[in-house]
Length: 148
Image (cartoon, rainbow, N blue to C red; front, side, top):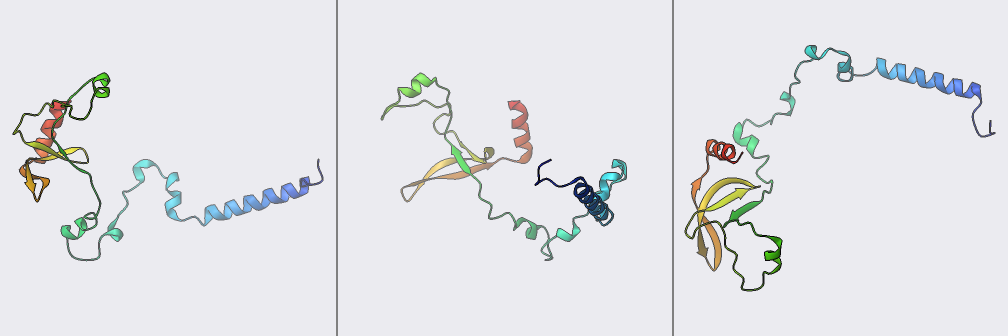
């Protein structure tokens, strides 16, 4: 045994201190940490009433919490599949044929999910999109089931 290592008596004393501290901590633990000892069928769903907004604004007050979250809005003109060798041959002035027809509505996606369709407009020399059709949640589900 090296001179820096504790003696057997010191090790036994440390072990006793740790055992006493652990016993004290487990007896003073809050009820939330003792749930693990309860059978799963006896555990109730926690209430989040304390986290509800304090104002009486109702649902409008709840949505205000997420209004400043940024999302990515994409307007999709069309798509195509081409081999990598054709991509490498692209140069200034090249034309890439898309699957969308001229005059066909463009898809408006939020974080990759189709939410609307619209047509291109030019306002003050900038492109924009005029929404012509908003996709309903049931329509979104129908489109997803077709794709699967």
